[in-house]
Length: 325
Image: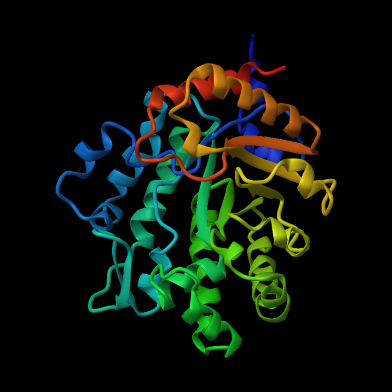
């Protein structure tokens, strides 16, 4: 199948903006540990040491292109980086730990340099920035990964004073990326599926709405990702993101009950990447057919690339998506 390269330029951005309906594909966490060279690039450095070096951010961001030709590059960073600006230190080795900080480094400076270089080098690719959703970010500050997020929910109900400061810094994190050259921003509100409809409506909706309103002022398309959140689709759709990234548990048609004009992203189950190409090919065709019935569709996994995934399997996926008719 011949692909018109001019039409493919920044195709993810075009679809997210509602200006194109063509095929496009990228992968959440595509710049990550599953890539063979990642360990060599990292060496014996801690993750945050990598975030201090803009050359490393650039190198890991573009690394997937050695294996497959996705339509977007997602900046190699982490959604918790803003915590370093509001009084916390981070540790990723042996599990994510957030503590009151004892030192300071401006991680936004190398991030800015890296985005500018990536945007220049890959001007025809959509460059994707990342930012956390408020609930997900707060869950690391208050619960450090404890399931159920009891302390996070308590802080939200009691309207802890630092929530306003958190929102301000998360907006700033996105603003830095937008001004440096990303084309769109994906919001990882990953853990919001852990709240009930009642909790969302009473305590969280106002926070989420304020945050989205602030992000829209950056004039970049917004992709909203959440996992296990189909019970909240009605409320989430009211946030009016440009694209909704759907996990593998829910088919696109269910979202249409609440938003028939939505642009969607997803949603191959990443846990099935070890299966043979015949099975995965059938899943790709099913998802692409479902996506074609939406206003727009960007192919992706229903979550990030697992650390055990084989790059060759992702290359197969990319080619199948681009061949779809």
